[in-house]
Structures are given as structure tokens and as C-alpha cells.
Amino acid sequence: MSFLIAIPEMVAAATDEVARIGSALATANAAAVVPTTGISAAAADEVSTAVAALFSGHARAFQALTTQAAVFHDQFVQALGTGAASYAAAESANAALQTLGQDILGVINAPTQAVLGRPLIGNGANGAPETGQNGAPGGILLGNGGAGGSGKSGTGQPGGRGGAGGLLFGYGGAGGAGAASDSGVGGTGGQGGNAGLVGAGGAGGTGGQGITDGGTGGIGGRGGLLFGAAGAGGTGGIGLNDHGGTGGQGGAGGPFGGGGAGGAGGEGSSRGGTGGQGGDAGLFGTAGPGGAGGFSTNGNGGDGGTGGSGGLFGSAGTGGNGGTSVTADGGSGGSGGGGGIFSSGGTGGTGGAGPSQLGGFGGSGGSGGLFSPGGAGGAGGFGDLGGLGGSGGFGGLIGSGGAGGAGGDGNTSGGSGGTGGMALFIGSGGNGGAGGNAVSIAPTVGGQGGNGGSAGLIGNGGNGGNGGFAKTPGAGGAGGTGGRLLGQNGLNGLT
Image 1 (cartoon, one colour):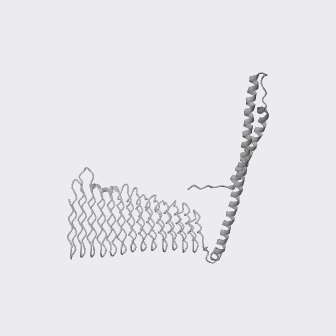
Image 2: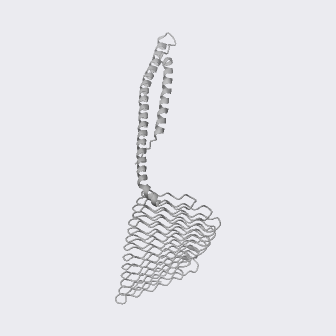
Image 3: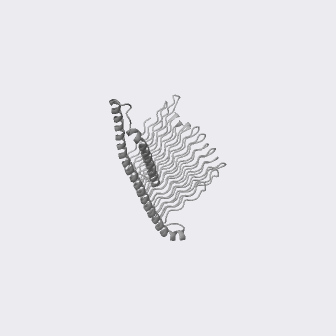
């Protein structure tokens, strides 16, 4: 849907301009009346007389049309003037209502502002940039918190904290960005503000760039105490000559809200920053995933962050992926978060690529809740030597173990697959992960398949993973042991 915006002053100015155009046309028409309507014949013959009469007739017809146009023009100018007056009157009325609303809010907010330094209804003010000021909280009942101010450039000053939302309804303010440092570590990002009863938490601020290490990302704000998602953690800052900053932890979710995602680790020269941990879920929400590890040019990639823990019925968070390295090892994937009573464990993150060295290891799967399965392990990263696959998570009291992650492919050697997770009481063991393939034309070795997980009291053992393809293929993993009371052993993997 399109919206029309009318500015009374511009409409009034247009009215004056159109009126001046009409006056100029009327003057020109008046000057042309005598010369055009009273044309004399060039000679006394009949042809000259007829030509003069023809042109004079056209001129009189034109003057009749211009008279009608002038009447229309006057009506149009009058309509424009009336419209401008109407717009001005409406704006004046709206301004009066707005002023009335502000006056009413002023009366309502005055007592709490005087006693508590906080209005009853209204949004909090933002912290000024380059000051690191905290954002002001929203109104006690209603209102969003103000954003935190950024730190002063070049000093590594931390960013300001976001203001809290109103107690009933209100979003938390975002944390301010940490300042870059001209001599050392970048500033830490400000923490996101917490929400009230209903509302989302504020995102954590980004860590500042540092000459040495990057600044840590800010922690995400807590979600609403009843409804509302938590804020994501801030991204870690860039470390120009050393480590990238660690990503901020995601905020915790409320009873019906999800946890915030962990912030990504910052890029670092000698090592990528570690990803932030995902925020824990509430009773019914999904936990936040761990942040990805940071990229590195001369050192190892950063490790992925751990996924947040699941709620009573909500899923656990996945682990963050490991960071890539140009010249060294890839970062390891983060572990999956643990499940709640009725929720499964989170999947482990994938290992980062290390094309010239070792691929990052896959993250372990999170343990399942009391009545839930464990999470799958993450895959190993690509490298000259493929990374190992992550182990599957343990199953709950009643729940199967998670599958092991596949080994990463490599130029000269594939990574081994991860071991399948164990079942504790009733449930099958997880299958082992497949070994990684070796892709070079030189003599190569495939990754070994992961062993299958063992069952508990009742259940089948997990199957072993197949070995990876290569000039020398990888061995298959052994099958897991079946349940002590009832169950079959798992099959061995193929070579």
C-alpha cells in the first residue's frame, strides 16, 4: 500500500506559483487580442479579405478557449489553496493531540522519574557514540531499553551495556560495539539488555579490533521472563597480529523463548577466535547454536562454540563450525548442547578446513535427555590430513546413542570416523561414522570407520562405519555390543 505525504507549506507555495503562472498567461493573452483578432486585409480583393477573416476567426476562437482555461485555472488555484488550508488545519490538530499525549505521559512519568530516575512508560535513551555509555532502561511498565554507546575509537574502551526493557513489555537494548585499539587489545562489546515479561533480549555488541588480540563480543541479553527470544552474542573483534576475539555467549531464553546464538569468533593473524557458547533454552524453547570459529591466515582456525542446553521439551543447540586456516590446522567444531528431560542432544559442529595441514576435528554430539537420544557427532574438516569425526552423544535413560560424525576428506589421508554414542539403559548404540576419503593421486590412506556404540540393557549395538576410499582403503569400524539383557551386536563396517 502506498502512502501520501503532504507538507502544507509546500502545497501553499505551489498555490502561489500556479497563481503567478495564470497571471502571466492572462497578461500575454490580453496583449495578443488586438493584433490577432483585428487583422486587416492585405488588399481590397476578395481573397485577401477572406484570409484576414479566417485568421481573425481563429484568434477569436483561441481567445474563447483561453477564457475557459482561465476559469478552470482560477478554480484549480482555489482548490489548491483550500487543500493547503485543510492540511495545515489537520496538522495543527494532530500537533495539539501529540502535545496532549506528551503532557499526559509527562504527568504519569513525573513521580517515578523523580523518585526512581526512570519513567513509567517510554523508551530509554541510547548511549552516545564514542562514549561507552550504557543505554537507559525503558519505562518501568512499558518501553524498550536504549542501545549502549560505542567505545571511543583507538582506546580499546568497552561498549556500553544495552538498557533493560520494561517490566511488562519491552525489548532489551543492543550492546554497544567495543572500540578499536591502536596499541593493544580491542574493547569488549557491551552486553545486551534484558527483556521484561514479554520481549526479546538485546544483541551483544561486537568486539573491537586490536593491534594484538581482538575484543570479546558482548553477551546477549536474556529473553522475556514469559515470552521472547534471547539476544545473540556479539562477534569477536579482529586481532591484527595475534588472536581473534572470542564470540559473546548467547543470552538465556525465557520459559517460552529460545536461547540466543553464540557470536562468531573474530579473525586472527596467529589464531582465529573461539565461537561463543549458545544460550540455554527455557522450558519449551530451542537452545541457541554455538558460534563459528574465526578465520586465520597464519595460525589455527578458531574452535566452534558449544551449543546451548535444551529446555524441558526444546531441542539443544548445535555446536558451531570450526574456523578455516590458510596455512595451519582447521579449528575443531563445537560440541552439541545437552538435551533436557524430553529433548535430544545437539549435533556437533563440523571441523574447519586446513588445506595445507590438518582438518579440524568434528564436535562431539550432546548427551540426550532422560527420555531422548544423543546428538550426532560433527564431521571432520578437510585438510592435507582429514580431521577426525566427532563422537556421538550418549543416549538418555531411554534413548539411543547418537551417530558418530564422518571423518574429513584429505589430500594424503582421510580422517577416522567418530565413535557411535552409547545407550545407557533402553536404546540402541549409535552407528560409527564413515572414514574420510583421500583424494590425491599420490600414495594415500583412507580413514578408518568409527566403531559402533554399545547398547545398554536392552537394544542393538550400533553398526561400524565404513572405511574411507583411497589407494590403501581404510578399515571398517567394529560393530557395537548388543544389550546385556536383549539385543544383537552391530555389524562391522566395510573396508
